[in-house]
Image (tube, rainbow, N blue to C red; front, side, top):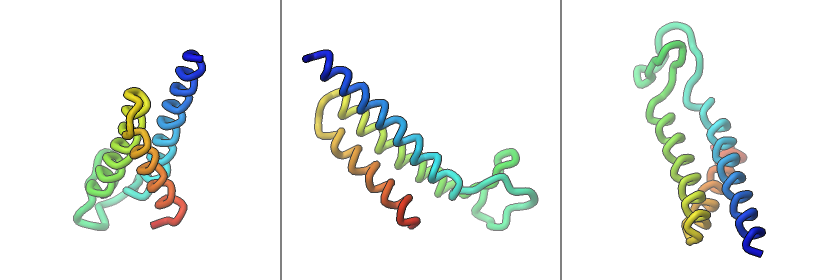
Length: 100
């Protein structure tokens, strides 16, 4: 019985990691891209061939990281943070679906 609980916990952790990476992959293109020439907006940063909005980039990375971390920490510690993390990841999924 304990082995089944441990396996279920590992599956939830892997699902949370994959879901977080999927959401990160869905959000990152909206923060910038590979653009030739000078920045079209003075708030954009250039890093090699990439031109991106730093505020949007760091907001996306931070929110997905916090949501995934809450989920994983909750799975490991078996506490309410898992529920909070899944709710945050669900909110992110709704934002991706609705295109806001």
